[in-house]
Length: 122
View (cartoon, rainbow, N blue to C red):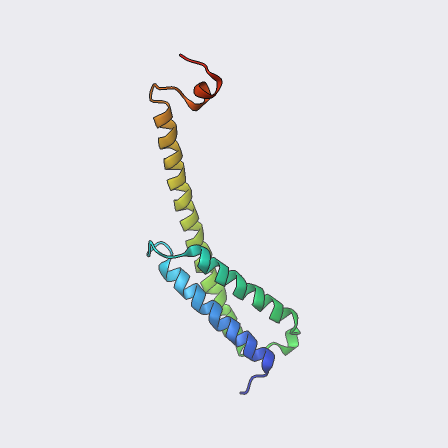
């Protein structure tokens, strides 16, 4: 089956998005050097391009061969959402621990920032 220009563009974007998701799903939480911000930018760009391509394609023109890829992509996105959510919860947890440590250090019997700021002394 030969693809037309739109189908080729859709296939290209699907391939890039599949690669981004596979990479992100494998590395998030496993590689401390993984750049989630850059990966998210690539993922967002692919989803945006895909959205634009779908807007210009009527549902009856959509190639049936892409349906299985879209179903697999949906599953990858579902896994990705779980992993990103877990990552964000872990980051939030670390942030909370750091905030607690800072507050505990400020409450060690020396002046608090508020006391220092307003000149109140114990």
